[in-house]
Length: 290
Image (cartoon, rainbow, N blue to C red; front, side, top):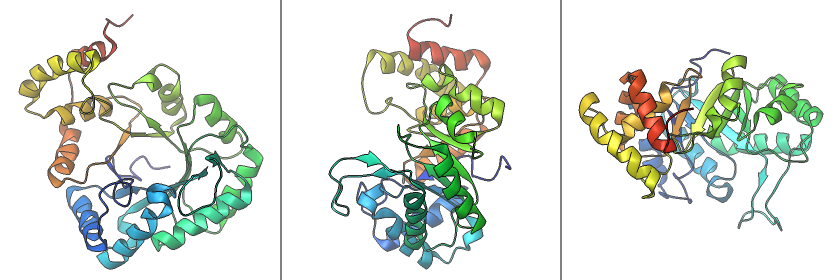
């Protein structure tokens, strides 16, 4: 799988619809164009976003955009049966039966008004998932040209091994940031680097802008020095910290603000010095490295 198949910065679409901005079709079309203009070509979806409505809203917007399908990459996820207004589920659960995976992908294709997904991810691991059944579904979808690539989301290394024993796993989308960097210590990023699995990460800015804690206070003190040194903003430096990891992480960013999108792309140009990178890690951990 080519490493440059997806844009290094990915547009997360979870908040574009009913779970956030509630964009109109025209506003969503504009947002797609804006993303492409700054260099973001990959759009991250999941069937459940907006209570199973955001994909269809995006599909209408993309159909009106005039953009050639091959110019963008569409990611979607399946497997979560969510409690909401659009489905009669009694309890939130996961379904990775062959029939459900195929049905869900076909439903996403209709909603997004596309003939294929560039990438399908299993949204979260289920204790009842069986690699053989998942493999059957993925083989059918790939042979029919409905998905080009396959991966998982929020899977531990052992869960990746379980699935990849039958079906090649090319992507794992995990939570990762300076404030939540467990993936560096539980083997997830080691596995992806070793097996050439592309890591994508959601919530890449972590809790820094959301909470005031001892951890964020320590990070703030370091960033106060580094923003001047690198002539960069705090969010750019938080992204640059992620981007320096050798596993080649692809941050999935949720912002729809044009200025912040441009700043995220410009973070790609920042190469943190080694000790600056570790100083931020120490600030996050609250103690020196072992």
